[in-house]
Figure 1 (cartoon, rainbow, N blue to C red):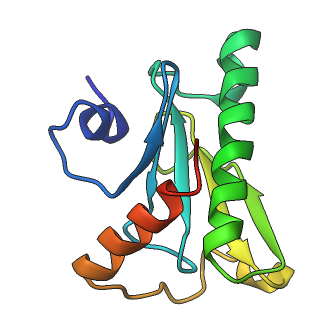
Figure 2: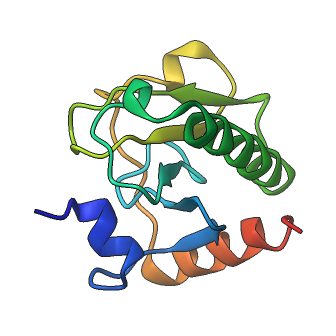
Length: 131
């Protein structure tokens, strides 16, 4: 059965897309910890990040780095936090979260509320910083 992320990449479920390439896909988290919180996933449906082939893993990390740099250019923050949990969706994914301190990377924190229009605008602005 296809994961929710596979359905998003196939266009069956809408998303706020940031970027994609041959191997990876990035989109805004719809329940963000911080404005700009982005999910980066491999196109190949693999449950556990460390089960990816080396080439797929390296492609995901490189793509994540590019997306993180674009987020940092658009969202005021000290760093882009990187979190890999992997329990909530059975499809490997990386959370890129704009942060100013460690306490902001707590999944028990209240989520940021953004309107549909704000999400669309933010996705477009972040995407504009990518090649």
